[in-house]
Length: 139
Image (cartoon, rainbow, N blue to C red; front, side, top):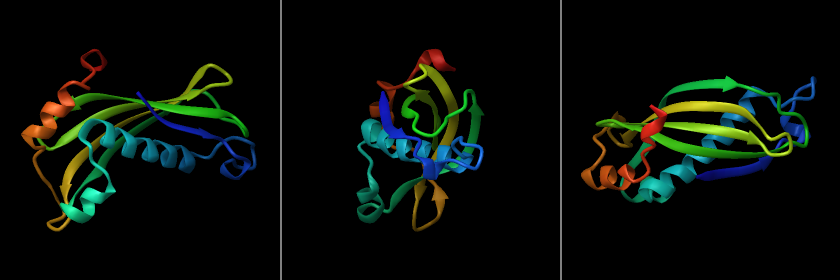
């Protein structure tokens, strides 16, 4: 599913003319919020009303092809694992103009109690919602 569309503006690039690593992470992070909403219906409003959230506990980024100033980018994501308290998602950043995969992020996030500051179990309702999105071929 498409989760993010953006452009590598000059302000996101370093002196060598390519996008800096911190902006890859920001784009992937923005995409993650759209994935959480698409799968679980979770938004920042839940942090306020239910006291729940998500905390990233692991990132593995692979930079596959350079992203330069002005490149049009799109990020897709696939849920690859549902644990007791966590999910693992594979995000792919596509460079639309070049027709290449620019980067991937494998991210593990835990469902989180914002008051206790601890991981909590994914609810049965959430698990059922997630199962239809699980990419069983990605493991």
